[in-house]
Image (cartoon, rainbow, N blue to C red):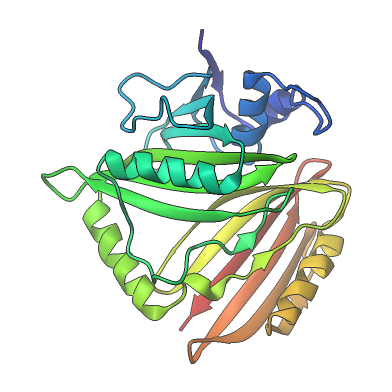
Length: 293
């Protein structure tokens, strides 16, 4: 039977207390679902867990995909379409096969990729623990009448040595406007402005989202471990410097470390912001943004 929770940060911590260590040989579907889908979420919503199942009437046919296992679905009910939606967690034997299978399912259901440069994907930002391939690609399906439709995001990654895919689907009331924004965003060539950043040893990194428009792009992550915001800032700042970013300033308000950067992207001057904020004990929220004037 589905299990429904009133989602809060406290509930998230309680659920995660049941998530297995990476060394656990065979986590249950419910444990996998919690650790993969809920670890980085904030806000208030009614969340229903469906271990090993899809919600009724789901927009994409995912049963019977070769080499793909359905871990389950997180069904979020919230006041706005942006906060609600479903996230399906799948696993497979290898990253490439899992990615290809889910993309074929999206295409078969009438979804098309959002406009983006042919040689780039929105794959920069905080890579999850475990390495491997990590990319987020956005798809859409128009309703056929009016400006709305469905938006889908596909993230493929490795966690604890296992390949996973997160497929999120939610309503997009202003889909037509989002497509126009994405077209302008692609023309500016800013999809590649966020470098891929590898995590330090001894922490677990959960990418928690991303978005943007013609003026820049932002990604976020939740980092669990013993490292402080200052230590994490030092680790990730070294990678930005190696990729040609130049540090402009560093400020350390209470429980935070914020650094400001500059770099050139396709002949344009771009400002970058890298920020870390201490949350609950053992948890740091990370953000990386670019701003183009």
